[in-house]
Image (cartoon, rainbow, N blue to C red; front, side, top):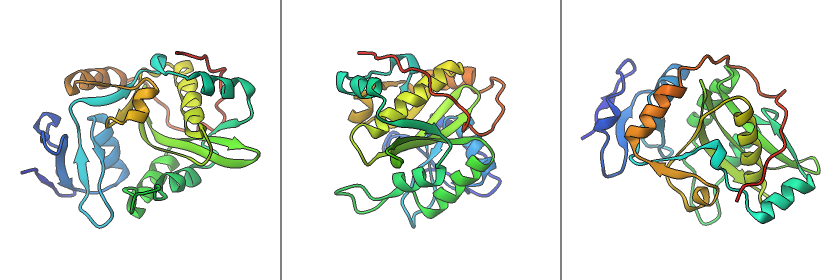
Amino acid sequence: MIPWLEHDTPFPPVQSALGEPNGLLAAGGDLSTERLLDAYRHGIFPWFSEGDPILWWSPDPRMILFPAELKISRSLGKTLRNRSYEARFDSAFDEVVAGCAAPRKGEPGTWISGAMIEAYRGLHGLGYAHSVETWIDGDLAGGLYGVAIGRMFFGESMFSRARDASKIALAALVAHLESAGFGLIDCQMRTPHLETLGAREIPRRRFSRLLEELIHYPHSPGSWSGASVAQVQCRS
């Protein structure tokens, strides 16, 4: 059994999360900005389907990406060098979230519900949630969004309408995070796609230690729209 959260119920310790399904910690609560920020500060994230109760997760192991370990393939490196795209920050947050929420080919629905969209719009308005967009010929070709607290970036979702568009956004994000001294990108759950980009799983205990180190760095929430995209170095 997992605990049911009322409006003012604190999260249980992440060590109490279930082993199957991996990381399920609690249900209920709400998606207020206060609740979401508290969740991220404890290594917890919401993930549930439309019509279901809010479910909170803290899986073990945890998928993460150290910015310095981003892998850029030869073909992606060529695209980055050609500069046939433009990467921007926080210029189309709503459109990026909508792109991530759109049903994927072969999938019946999406976990990014209307309530989730409104919740992250609230975090964006407060300067915690950010988007990175890839533009090609003036059109939004792909992007990603997530939450920044301290020197941690918590990735939420990405989408692509053109080849490598989401990877370009990730490369731009990594360049920005490295220049700003961020130490870790939380990728939540393992996917083969993220593994090809250099992400890997670490034990939840280690993730919690890293989180504790990075989350308390001084952080001034605000728009990243003025962020410059540094030259992305190719890594194999």
